[in-house]
Length: 444
Image (cartoon, rainbow, N blue to C red; front, side, top):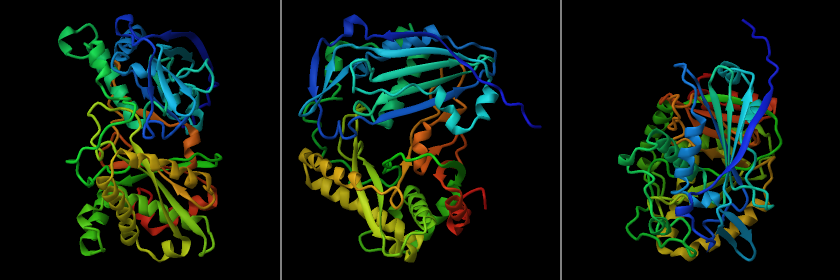
């Protein structure tokens, strides 16, 4: 049955600013951010959730607001301002979080049938520090006509990376559930507790000498770069088929690489890197770069409740000819070697290593979107955990600008992850015809 297209209208109901409770206000405290904290400068982390009303229960927006206020006790930096001079500084002036409520004349089912680019309207606007009018955290709740709702979140990347944002969302959800419950043990903080959190420590956090050299799984979150919108497509990658690829590595003895440490993330990265590069039909002698950002959250001994930026960039440079001659096992081994080399250097270094992050800027300024491949992976993040009275979200929304690169996200099903691609039609056809892509996807 072909559904009649609904003419959607979004009406703004209210906009207000939520502040940190006065008893927990940190009056004009200022922190100089370390290189690690401001590595992403003014990048914005934007995402959204779609919650379905299956039990005729309306979302309690007032409870959402009150629980958010109490959650800000744990995350006071979201109410702060940022000042830029020689270094980037965060100023705890309790500017607040912008909270907007809207209403749309469509249902949950209408939202699920929308194109991804159309779902941007449910996301919160950008959170920049370029002007005094901008808030570093913005929330947008859109009520649908069947009492389902969408929740858009925008956080300045200077304050938190995506990993930290999902910690924040899950903390807010927990507070919503336990609001006014003094036995929950959540949200009962003093000013001294907050000051000892270690989120922004000026010179950063000292490395832990006992931290592992590298982790086997979930060891890298990918760098992302947006480019012009083309045609977004989606396919599902089977984790069971990736597991088969991993088992094949047991027969390989690459120098300096123990095959047992090759992760499914390495395999998927290698397959996408090779397929997309070849789909662009470049000359064999052309250089191409795979851009990655390494998650140092568990590598560098950061505090358990650290939620700021915890990433370092690396680039894997090669040529189209070399990629074409490499099988997936060889290419995944190359990726793992770069990660191991990063870790070996990290173990020998102290915090000053992060100052070399500025060298990554040279790579970013030389980006050629026609040749280079940059990947985003939120596969290991607890995306589907928040609940605000209507159960866990059924869908997750990315901003369409991120479809300029391969984007990997988890699905509610544990057997698959979703990879979104935004390539031209002929490039997309080339990728789908790649034997490795066909093998790991449902389009086989």
